[in-house]
View 1 (cartoon, rainbow, N blue to C red):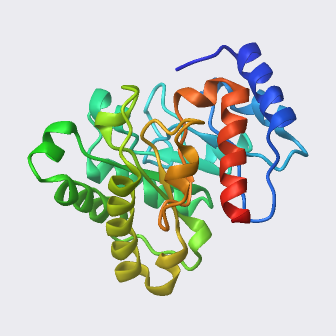
View 2: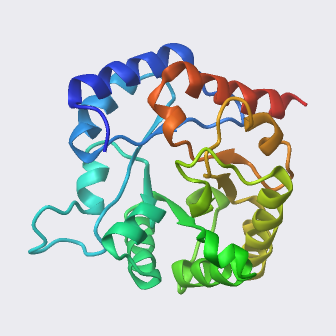
Amino acid sequence: MNRTIPEAVELAEAVVAKCRPSEGLAVAVCPPAVCLEPVGRSLEGSGIGLGAQNMHREESGAYTGEVSAAMIRSAGCRYVIIGHSERRQYFGETDDDVNGKTHQAVAHGLIPIVCVGEHLAEREGGRAEEVVGKQVEGALAGVSIDDASALVIAYEPVWAIGTGVTASPDEAQAMHALIRGMLVQRFGDVGGDVELLYGGSMKPDNAADLLKQPDVTGGLIGGSSLRADQFAMIVEAARGELRS
């Protein structure tokens, strides 16, 4: 919940000036709902995708204040973040809610960025893999995809979000490998190519090391996305990893 519409447009224009997608490297921004259409206009012709931060699980109806998949599609969105840890923590979203939203996104041709991750107590209690595995299973129950580009999973260890603490590259890879295995088991070869993003305080100074991991194929960027220069450095780290 950052940036007014003029501020969001200014930030988007700076991102367009500093960040260029390239072969094999996708870049997208996900502003608040009221900023989607004006930010989308700022992105036109840049190759940078537009995504929403949330949506409702129902097609339409008496859900005052909510936005539907059709609404965000009409605003120009290609992506939608689903089940972010803050939605789960502050708004009580369950695995069933995430699953309903994922089905709705896929049905409307949106690419869901499905977020999963454990709290510190769960990690310290040795339950991290159990918790994340349950979230992945819950989110994807009954979901069918024919192409890897139809789905993105973001692993965001809750204990590393906004705290300045980051999972080590080995910790991130271990969880991404678990998720990768579950996707292959569920979707076959398609699951092997689904993009897996790390979403726990990826920053310019740690992006390269995280992105070197075989199953960390991108980042879901938080605080560093509010500064175009920092965001651009992360994009360049990803570009450098593609070249290596």
